[in-house]
Image (cartoon, rainbow, N blue to C red; front, side, top):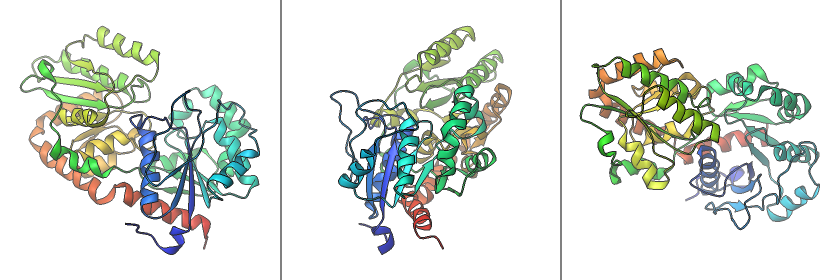
Length: 398
């Protein structure tokens, strides 16, 4: 049932994002789809324009209540120029949007379409998604510095607002970029996640799990630097060297970001002597992925930088205690439920894991509080209502 007022019901929101046709793909895909579907559910008129061309013969999976617009037919490389036809294409198929919501940043199609939106007097916002902070700016620094100088800063400056996923992300953006306005609304979780732990059994880890072991789990894109997995593996090696204290094992679920990450991961596992204590089990999807969340004692996310990682919210919704670093921008939420936050270095991770092992009797209570926090404040319906209020402020300024 729609839960919106007359002003909200009249709003037309167009989301533009570099999403993958597969619903099982990464966190940004889930986030854009989840937000768009929830906004349609509460009564907004919502369109979704994939900004990357689809592979030949592949179609985009439908999002309930959301109009899917045709994506570009080929890669777009010129951040300065895009055909005028795109504005007419959007008007014809969707109508005139009240807000265009671009997701992510360094995609040439986004900056080019934003210029056309400005010419058409269509206000737009940018959802930063973790790439506008200082550490993210240092990745491919030369390319980003050139892009910032040539087109990205004007793309940001002309935005009606920047949408940050957490207060920490908002502060970093304000420190680095000139923005007209910035607001914070978090990611959300699907309703089915809140019921899944009662319906699903944990994945069977076989002989990888021994009695008394502390099982850590990571689920997400395996990007060694971004996700801080190099730090986590070094911490696991230190724990192994301190023989006799307790058994600690780590499984990693997800696709490798690049071939280089795959090579780095297995090279580190071998050189650090972690063959028996660390396993990469490949990508898992749907209910199978959720069962691996349930199979760990503690979900761990030692990321260097994020907007707000979906995987941490999903783990909390499934009742898993979490260990995170400040770069995840989820430390306050995790600590509110009794979980742990530590500095992003191997020594701090080791000491925190030791502390966690000593408090393993509290895992059930921490998991329960985590689940209830997600239910009370972080469903997609709640997030959609918050975003709608921010859109209204931009469309009808006081």
